[in-house]
Image (cartoon, rainbow, N blue to C red):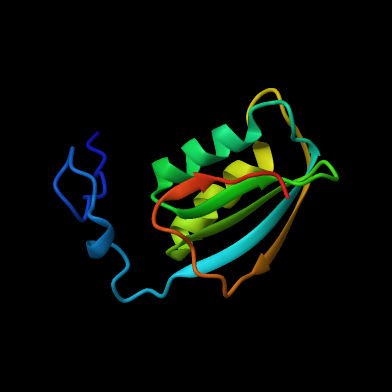
Length: 117
């Protein structure tokens, strides 16, 4: 039995250029606040890595009250990928909830870890 596989919109083994993805799709930018055991467990570094893998732009930082805050920007699929990851977090974290709000903040180029706020 032959199972057809979907074809990629770009050559196999080559990631798409940021400029060539979502040209007709507007950028989505969301601010998230992650609650639970999310500080001291590598959450910011793991979120940065997940965002970079997905091709998202933005930043992440700890908040003094114990949450992690992040700005995530990209096409809808990219943002959804990072949001899904944030609901799980790294293995050492315990995510109790993720508050999400659309944002008009302009994201930086790339993804960065910022100082605690």
